[in-house]
Amino acid sequence: MASSFNPNDDTIAAVATPPGDGGIAVIRLSGPESVDILRSIFKPGSAEENPHFSPRMLYHGHIIDPESESKVDEVLAVYMKSPASYTGEDVVEIHSHGGHVVPKKILDLIFRLGARPANPGEFSLRAFLNGKMDLAQAEAVADIVNAQTEDALKQAELQLEGALSNKILEIKNIILDILAEVEARVDFPEEDIDPIVKSALVSRTQDILAGLETLLGTYREGRILKYGVSTAIIGKPNVGKSSLLNRLVMKERAIVSPVPGTTRDFIEESIDIRGIPLRLVDTAGIRITGDEIERTGVALAKKKAGEAELIIAVIDGSAPLDDDDYEVLEGLQGKQAILAVNKADAGFSISQGGLLEHSPAERIVHTSAKTGIGIENLKDAVSALLRGNSRRAEAGEVVLTELRHKLAIEKASESLSSFLKLLDAGESPEFLALDLRMALDSLGEITGEVTTEDVLGRIFSKFCVGK
Image 1 (spheres, rainbow, N blue to C red):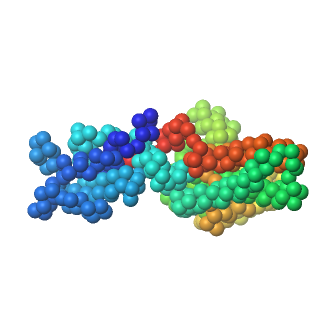
Image 2: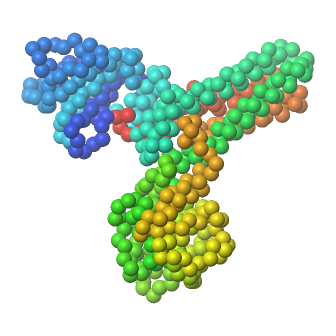
């Protein structure tokens, strides 16, 4: 991506809409030659021969091959003049018919006239480099595209609006005030900081650390919202695992049969539970069996359970526990797990006391996959287990979703803690200022004020082409 770090010196182009069948495709250009390229291939639908292309006006016409003068497609085109555009450069969008052939033909014409293919995320990279958004906001663009639930989308939108960036800016401004107070004493290192001033510096720094700690506490919820949770449904055969999967995804995704051992492979499905993306895996029933194929399925079920971040263990509440049930229950030790006591419509033959030896009461839910009894309670239990007491996302507060942000805040906290220790030890202002500047640099990594080409390359390479 080396060339992409020099915006304004060339023109890039890409299809900004998903590939494949579709009514409309949007071809996006950004760079100094964008409007000239458009003029070379666009013929207006009206009598006007050379449209002026006023910014933000939609023009109807045809894309024409300049060499053969043949029509390629009927389109709409719009020009957005620098700096009032997404990238901060001259931007053109051509709205053509969708599919595979038409957008490719138009792109080929554009490339022939001097534009080059955009790298993944290069439009957003240029927006960042041209000051249209900071790095945290640019990352939110990809999060909006990839959001799996409404809660995840809300978080991405908050970050794009600058909620996290503004919070970081507020903290940095307080640190800058403290730094100014410290550096004012650099010329007088032999004089101790006034006790009243020192007390104020300590208090303000401790407040910052408390705020950063609160922000760090949101990372678990943010990570869950962004990436989802791998979830294995386990249990012995014929306890209703596949029926429970079907009930949760609200469609006949897995084969349901009264014959034990029907599920021998695993089935995956993604669902939204209370705003949390879950990647559900329905596994083969866990039991001792002489069937070689079923044994392979059981081994795979145990492997999936070991890899999962969450387990939904299913037992048949209408029948006494047996050795296969106990093997399932023992596998819950040390795991995030919900125990679904299924077949509630058929009555219960298991005491609650016996189940409490394997799972806390708040994680035991009585369900009937057949009738739907307890399914909403199961969803509540999953949400409570994964989110704990945190409801910041639900309340519309910004949470940390990026590991990069978390590590930067941890580094800033370490520098501020070091500042407090040096301040207490009476160190000279130069050393105090160094820790404060390191904290500022760490926080600056979040918004991109302090960054490297390698970091930018890693971030924007994850974007889709056209964004």
